[in-house]
Amino acid sequence: MFVQRLKALLQRFREDTRGSITVETVIALPLLFWAAAASYDFHEIHRYKSAREKATFTVADMISREQLPITDNYMDRTRQVFNDMVGDGENNQIRVSVVEYNATDDIYELQWSETRGTGDLEPLADEDVRNAHDTLPILTDGQQIILVEAFSTFNSLFSVGLSIPVDIETRIFTAPRFVPQVSYQAVLGQG
Picture: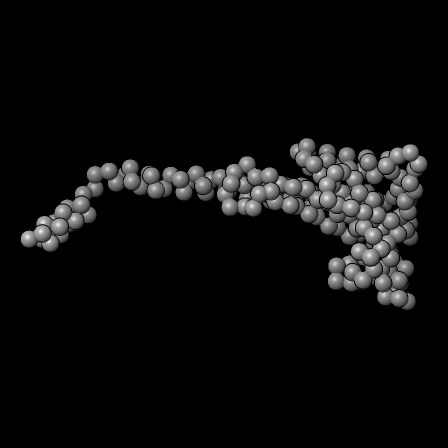
């Protein structure tokens, strides 16, 4: 008798549709809010990275066209151009390096490296590029490349599963355009 009564109660409960909208709303609404927030965050992180890639390309192109030596003031203004292009007032850091390939010794030689902005990005050292065959492009003997790297941190507005904060790094190679090499001239008293 108890089993039949329990069966009847369960059947009545299963067939009862009162309150189903409330239950569906309680289940679905948080999922809808999460989906909207996740869509926004994923769009923002891609926009954030895209803006930095475009700014890094622009800085690399700008430096590749220089015919005069790069100075400390030029580097400071380059970072300002980068910040203006990304347009979000975030703390961005850039590193510009010129690397030359020595075919005789099969090594890369660092000509100069400068960073601007605050953060973990330090100027490259000779040891960082000497045997970097897997990360630097194939060059001919004496050929130089300009390596422009940018580092920023993306802070999500919502917590939707991204590890917060997300480090965004961009890295662009280009060759000097109008001169065989891009030189650097440090100005005393600046930097």
